[in-house]
Length: 278
Image 1 (tube, rainbow, N blue to C red):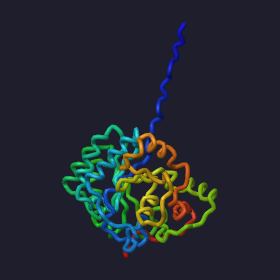
Image 2: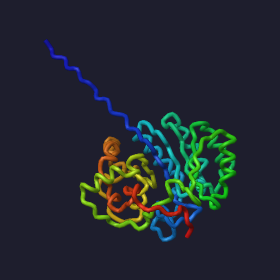
Image 3: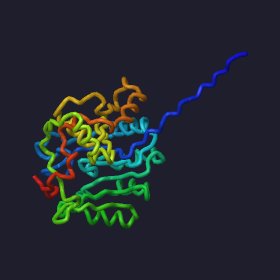
Image 4: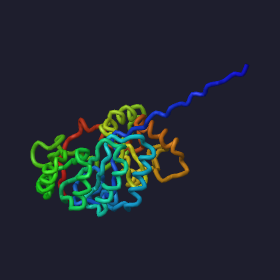
């Protein structure tokens, strides 16, 4: 009698991104003193556009790694300053069945032009816009809201001026330094960080980070990153399986950037008026 062995294929667990924020530009129309992305004058992060082809390549790499994305986001800088933004909105249409919402974040200093409006309208109810309302600085706000309202596009207006600011204003995280937390304390605090809880990954210039602070603090050259702090999307020497393994553990341990970042103490830190211009 022959022994017939049944080989069961192990089904790979789907890898889902809760929020995947793509940063096509760090150019911005404002110069906020407490910019959380360190884009203020002398802040340490260079203002620049990422070439359209490179942004598309990074998006393709992400959708090769993730089976599904809940929110695909475009953030800046200010995204409407990016000359190829309409093309970028159209480019991700090919992944339309792979994400639940297309989310755009803006400071409403620039209204979408006709080409951008047409690209946005193609997504219908799938599109959502977060507007940071900086009062007089958001001088295209009313025109923007009129366009969104007339076309039944969902949006949220976050008040960042005068009294009763959203989340009571901003924190000051602009002078990062090693907070010298013991390892076990750092691990606990990093898991309680708001950025960790919302799982808002950031894609910038070929690298996929678990949060914007990891992304931009590394850009500042504050420290040498730990192994597996981010995924190098353009490194073909690292296999797809290894990159997915890193992503599966992305929120299980503190990053090197966590040592320098005060966002994990956001609940108890003092607040300051948002968007004060330098």
